[in-house]
Length: 67
Image 1: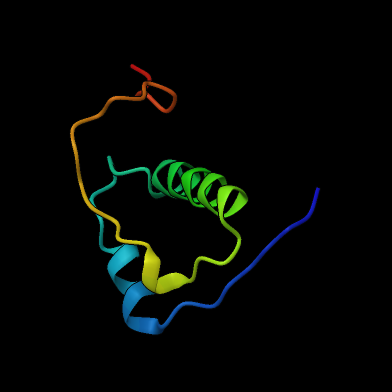
Image 2: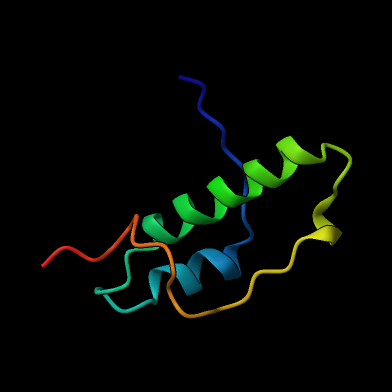
């Protein structure tokens, strides 16, 4: 399995660490990356400016919080 890493700026890193403990950042990133890859598979000419991340009501229960 390939491993991809990308650097983030220090301010973003600090903001991620400041999130409440109940926020599982990795779950959000898995979902975002999955959708990002699907869109790039459909159209590989897209660039970062073509993507906007917004909050919406949950429709996909793939990463539903475990109780």
